Amino acid sequence: MRLPALLLALLAVGCSGAPVQLAHPAAQKATMLKGGGEFTAFGPDAVTYDRRLVPAGAQASLTTESTPGQTITSLVVEGFLPRRAYGAHLHTKPCGRKGDDAGPHYQHMTGQVNPASEVWLDLTTDDSGAGHATARHAWHLDAAGAPRSLVVHARHTTTTGPDAGTAGDRIACLTLS
Ligand SMILES: [Cu+2]
Image (tube, rainbow, N blue to C red):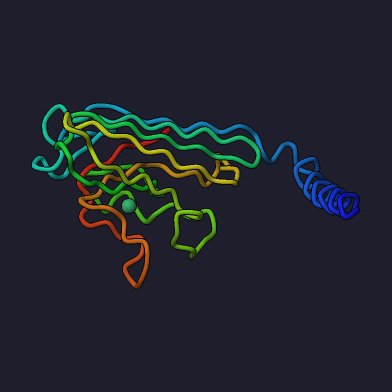
């Protein structure tokens, strides 16, 4: 006998959620970001800052697909050190000659340092030095203000405490477009 009440509640949730998308059809266009290539010391679009951790021949490919209400980001790497943990995030600026050039982390909710607001793509490589990571978010990425780079870090991301969001040195960078 409680089912009708439950259905009404679900319908109410659905109805209150729907107009938000319908009211702004132009503001939520599909957005796609891509980056990829073999890392070299000179880049410019795939640059490494540490040849020990990102050996010659190492490469990566990143794709972000954003549709209204959903963003899926996928990272694939090859030629990295085998069986090793790497951190990776989307950052706000394009890659440069120094790791710091990529700026801070992209944050969908400004000031919130967590994997729901930022895009974390930590991975551990297999025996051949290959690895992959996928991040899913329940928000839409606007082309304006979208992340401009993927930064690979020396270790996995710290998830709690005062160092949350840090992952060691910046060792490689992919510029996205
Ligand atoms: Cu980072």
